[in-house]
Figure 1 (cartoon, rainbow, N blue to C red):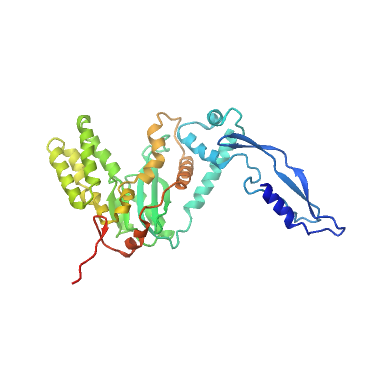
Figure 2 (spheres, rainbow, N blue to C red; figure 1 turned 30 degrees about the vertical axis):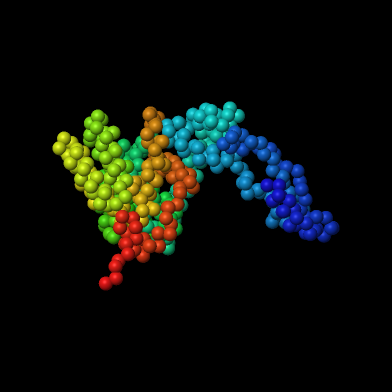
Length: 381
């Protein structure tokens, strides 16, 4: 901050008034203010300058790390949506933040939080209209996320799509409220992506088989292949089995999706059907109905398998909210739920890892054939 201040003074060092005095001079400090950070409140004094030149176009100093009127570091603002979604009411924020930041935490009143929520909604609306233009996304992950506190309508949830582009970077593409099993809800999401510039069909989509997403996908992006999420499938199958066999069955399911080849996965698949089909046909039926879509990954580079087996990029962001919140204080309004979810996703996106095997992405784009995760070289005729 002080370096930038001295650079500003040096820039105008030769700028003089008619009487020979320097135009720009140091003029003390602005009043000291506290900035609430992740380690507690920090007192900051910002130097200021005096521009002696007459007129309205005055030179001022505003440090980039401390914008005008800032009272909270961004890391603290990212904490607020987590507290809200965990059921902490606005009026209880002071107590919750004091426990995290120390008893001296200030400036986080209910009014401040209300203003922040309005800002986040404006950011969300702008993001939702952004142009996807020439971007190319090879893989997309889709999920409908329920969390507590619930949205205003109990069956309503947040529909989320994440994409991986031609450089292996993961990015949130769409997020809106809707109904998880509704093809129409997902159709609107996908058509909006196409309207904003996503013209080329993704190569592969990953998601839970229970989504209304798949019907919509076949209509909007007809050539996109389908990979069912093994995380969801494992949970669905195990839930239909008695607890006494779940641990053993889970190991047998892992044998399928962790197999090195499609042939080995097929052997493990058939073994599971034969082992559990007689007593627990309903559990096996949940697996068999998506057999082909569960094994699509073998037609893609092995380096990408750990990314495309599951819809984990979405699941992991909401895991804490979905599984650890035991009670709520009412329901979220549509705007609050979306704004808070948007902030969570934007915060998480900064930490998302690129795809492994980025050198394989041009091959996927050009339609190179892969078998068992390896590039297939056709023999000469």
